[in-house]
Length: 148
Image (tube, rainbow, N blue to C red; front, side):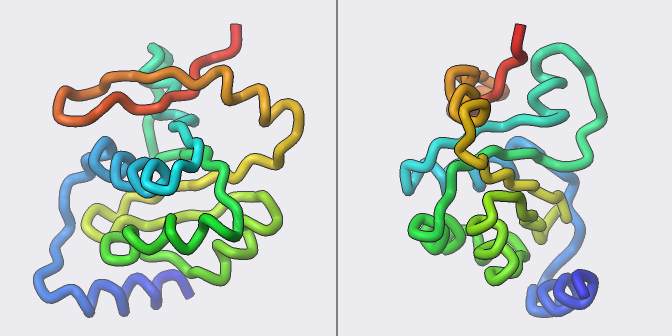
């Protein structure tokens, strides 16, 4: 099913060819979608660990974002051109406070979006978010720092 969606999306792109993955650019576009609607978000997972000194092979981009059903349309709107996703699956994930994926069409990089469950633990994560300057071309990235 996903393969069919990818094939249809790529057929719509007039001059598509696989681009090298620039994780910073892909991550920045999704972070900007959150920032535009003032939704708290941060990078986590293997990218956050690697930037903090625990080198890991990044297979995808993990993003924690406090999305809800009201903010979801405004979050997805600027991503529709560059990412492949199923709105109905995303709405369900946001309602159930789970996760969903976006697939960047130029690089085929996957962005896994984790929607916090609003537990006390999840609420405490906001205190662990710090800014990290990865590249002077971009503003600092919100990054989940390790628990000591």
